[in-house]
Length: 222
Image (cartoon, rainbow, N blue to C red; front, side):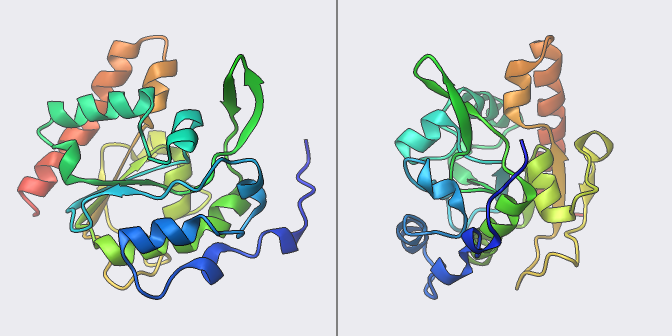
């Protein structure tokens, strides 16, 4: 179905980002965001969570049905898969900062009581960009793990492909200007892909292998 949203309905989140940055101020300000139309059908904005001095930031796509209801990122089944994988490679989930590129849940229709996820468009990612920029200024992570294609495209542009990049340490792109760029970036699949995979064990082991590269990088930066 073509997107008939008028440009004026997506002014971008910049006007809502507070000047004084803290996790609390970002969470409060995001609830008022009208940077795109997704706020209309979402329960609430879901800002990132975790240590604001974390060395590692994990960046996903958007909140899901449960995250939208609870107001916290990665609290559903995909979050449990991610936590298990992090623990397996020696990264404590309590020591990272985790967030999504898009802060409102985009969905289309329902299956029983559950709303069906619909991927955000590039316009939604662009509109939400100022929130991610603010989180990067606040947290200043050493490394960023990109969870899936939407996160990868938000950072590297439309030509990014997870399959071509996963498990390899890359530089932060100059095209995404931040005050203190992360020292490195690593892409992997989104943990929800593990849940959808025919061979979940193999998909999970691939996620673990990628995260192990990130864990090693945290221990030995060079």
